[in-house]
Image 1 (cartoon, rainbow, N blue to C red):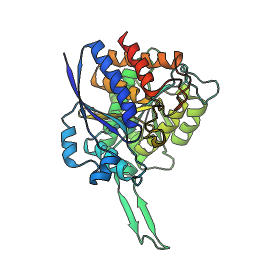
Image 2 (cartoon, helix red, strand yellow):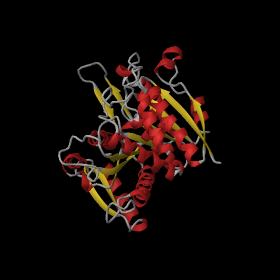
Image 3 (cartoon, rainbow, N blue to C red):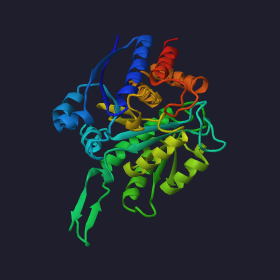
Image 4 (cartoon, one colour):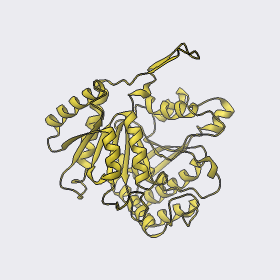
Length: 361
């Protein structure tokens, strides 16, 4: 029986509540599919920072390298200045563990209300591969004459060919395995590059050249498209059915995936993975810590449960992952009144029970 070592970081606010339900579902799935989960909890987050001044020390990063994956709840504490925990824990983990892919499926589940008129699960069914290690997030830049009338602030977007190539390779492979044709819902697998070649003429010239060179040479079976990022935002609202797999840089990916999340029903259902294909990956609900709901038992845990599903898929337990996805779809189609906190018709733990019970059937 295979055993997976999983680091669990519940984090702040409602993070511990939703992670508890994700773990509940993961345990039910492990029992069903005959593998083991060796879970270790870590208390990194706002409360620990308030006590010790620590975010994510180097010693913790070294320890996390020993795990197969990380399941994260949420980072963000109302008593800690914004940016401290996000940079000190989330970004540090992503950079130090070289989690250079951020994967965001954008899929509308049955029964979930969509803000786009006339769009349903058939139309909203794509994924975004976001490069996760470069761009404006590297911290390259600074201030001169700070605090004066002549202050200058510079923050540079930086990419190397190495970073671009490895992201594109992951995206092509993902499109080949999980594109619409591969999933039986389309006639071809398509990978589209999202950029801004008409303005960002250096960075996205590099991306576009690398994209077509790799596609022509190694992935002739994958159709290639290119979209400007502003047009992409319009089409995500008007014609999301055009999309299959999108690949883009860090900044654009950050923006368009939040837009995608609201079209799939909001932050209560959206999950993401920070992936190192040859190392330790981290999976999380993307909605944040929602501190105003802490301890009330009303927060929606489905995004955390879907993060656990993504974790199993990435670890190679694809049948188990599909079982969780099907159970979530069953719950949204037949049980939940809404995805909003306090309006689901069930408590946080009851939603977890619904999905765990369905998985075990």
